[in-house]
Structure formats: structure tokens, C-alpha cells
Image (cartoon, rainbow, N blue to C red; front, side, top):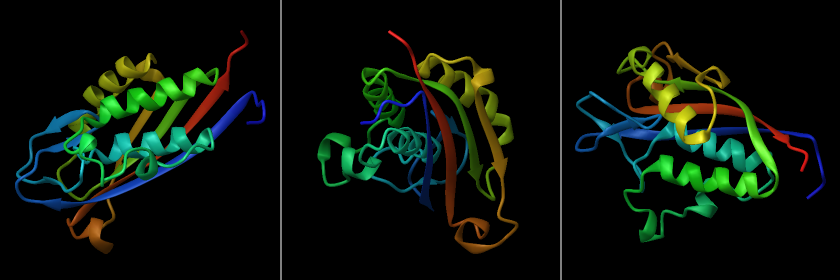
Length: 164
């Protein structure tokens, strides 16, 4: 891997909304009658952040690292998977400078949960909550997300190589 002072990565994830699952986004259990379908806890925000970190480092993506064919990750807490990825990044001498992200959902409203998401993620990542931006967006009734059939998330991370 070429030595670079800064690395930037983007991540994306989407999961369908289903009955019978908890809705967990940004490490927060959200009070809602439905949840997201996935092999792990299906936390779209954390998955997008993981993929952004992996992309910044030019590592394999989340599906390769934590495949849905591996029972070790069935029902996994995505925040714990995030911590594993952060350890991989830090082992290369990089640290997270900041994260910018979007959660796109028609329902439920995300704004009331964002402060808690920021606190959880900042704590787990060793960042200040001022280093993490989480914005809530809708699709204005367009596509599967806009019709309430799925929730998606986007994330951008900036990593910085620290001098030894």
C-alpha cells in the first residue's frame, strides 16, 4: 500500500424493511414496528461507515470481510464489526479524522435518534461527536426507499496517517 497522509472512502448500504426484526441504526434501537432484513443486525449506517473505511484503505468490502454465508456473523452487532475494521485501519497507522453520513428513510423519523447515534459511534471510534455528521433525508416518495420498503445510508470518511 502506498504511503499517503490522507485517505478518503465512501460507503453505501441498503436493506429492505420487514416485520419481525428490531430496527437498529447507528447502534441505536429505534422504536418502530418493523426492522431491516439482513444477516447481521442490518445496521445500514454502520455498514456504510464500515465500507467507507474499507474503501479508504483499498481493503475488500464488507460483504467479503463479513460474508452472509458465514454463521459467525448471523445476527452480529454491527458496531462490534465496525470496531474490528477500525482496528484494521489503525494497524496500518491511520486514524479516523471525520465521518459524514446520510440516513435515507421515509419512516420512522431519524432526527430524534441522531444525537444518541453520534454519542455511541464517537465513543466506539474514539472520536468527538463533533467529528461525526449524521443527517436524515427522505426520498420524497420516490423508489423503494421513498415507498417505505427500504432504508439506505451513505458515508464518507477521511483518514489521516499519524507519524510514529
